[in-house]
Length: 572
Image 1 (cartoon, rainbow, N blue to C red):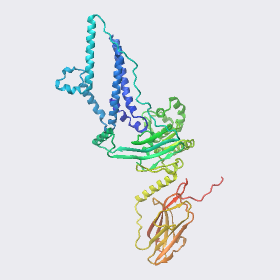
Image 2 (image 1 turned 120 degrees about the vertical axis):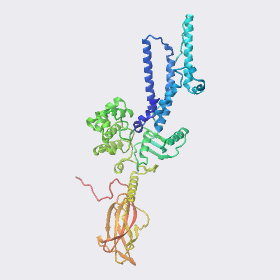
Image 3 (image 1 turned 30 degrees about the vertical axis):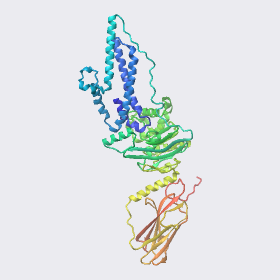
Image 4 (image 1 turned 135 degrees about the vertical axis):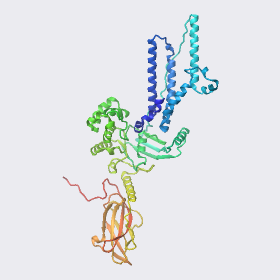
């Protein structure tokens, strides 16, 4: 029971990285202890036979039945204490004194008659008192029967009628999701994942009490909230969002490593997940041994692994280090080996987190080539992309995350554009201001994009853009106006001023001058931009004022950068 208590905590790395029922760790610990006891019991029997002791082997099935009941009871208690150990951390240290107290409170080494009358009611609380007392009474009765038989010249014989002793398997399947008949490989319905935020000991105890009572956490952290999606065969899914938004939690939920707090997850087909560095690896094993370990966890037999071993080692390409313990590997070597094992099974669904970001350039290209071939063969990829330009060609759909809220699924280019623009806007807010403000002198009185003022303008690629407005000049001389195009984060794209082209602004009122700039074929790629108008003096030397307007360029393209350059492909 003590070994089962610490089984989950001692294998925390395996629990976090590999999807399998946690109960197996406790069951394996209890079963191994049970086997050790059986071996010890057999050794004692052999020793007694060697010394010529007479044994009543007819009671052996009864003893084994009692041990089986004891093992089931120990397993049930170990499952409970292992769950408490995960939260409280010190349960295993408390079990030793409790077991010692229970041992000395059981009349095994001494008869019950030695216990004072005042303490016997307390002793009766211990269930082992009744079983040990019954065993003592049966042993005394047997000794009396043997004595009577000896005095009568007969032989006492006892028979134990036994049958096949069977225990039902506690699980029909160790792992699995409901199988769907259609082409949907992944289906999530209103999936939520919550974690308790209690850190103090009292808060942890209250959390355990709420869990046992079936009540919700008092102060939960919502890692996922109301996530619903479907991924069909041949589709791929990319997840983008800020750190801590829940992308990795969602992938672990799909992989079966994390169980949702509410909602349903349905998976069809074989899943191969590469969620963390060294997922399923043992640090003390060599790379070759870990290949067999990780591939076995994926369901491959030893013969299948040996048949694919050369391909795995060739893909990993770590040379003679394959026979060294992986605790000496660099992070890049670990991810090489992990991805090589993940690719050997050709799964229906491949799940990857941001682990590929640690690989070198050549390995990332090898992985990209494998993924392209995998997707071309109809595979389904679920990933957290490390670069939006790379995953644009891989993910057919890309949902977005903000905090724990799941955004509706949209086209890849649209989500990528909105995600990058959101980051650019955050960077622009974090930067200090330029300090250019209206000084009561030259000022931009109005600024319009295609006649639209004080509103965001949406313009398709290669559309016609007209920037117009008026500038106030206190000296009644024609001022200079500067027009600039910048990204949402403030990075400059293009700028010019009216005096560069020799253009003089036209007077339209008292010290008021108008300007109009036409861009007949706007070369900007889809994204969010800002158009700025600056008021300058007549010499174009001093900058007095700045007014900005938002511009959104729409369209679909896989080109990279900010603008499209005129080009043509020629026959070499």
